[in-house]
Length: 128
Image (cartoon, rainbow, N blue to C red; front, top):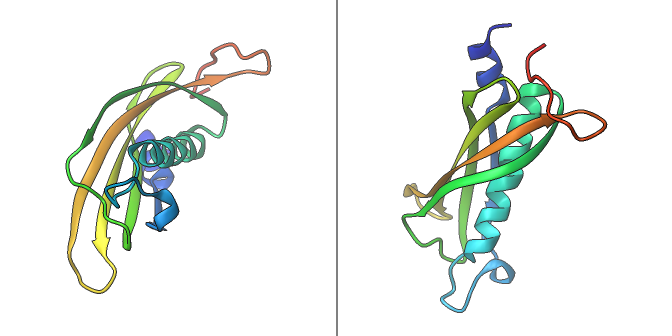
């Protein structure tokens, strides 16, 4: 399988409903909750790509472009954007959708860097 095919097969999409227990005092999705969901999707994407133990080592610039109101749906999409020897980067975009209309727009985006590790938690090659 080529790297491009692995990237396509590991693309991860998850939908969530924005309920009141995940919102802040402005009735929009709490930023920390958005980041947690993004890291989870990035982890799943990295693991599906590598099929190895992966750990988050950094997050790069997370842009909150639009507020995400309670009572909407969000789709998180993770895709590998960079592959090194022991590390890779995953871009995660969050799209917000109205529940009862076709309106959809990108609300948040960011990149996460992961490293593949062995049993002793030492970095190892992603592709053998």
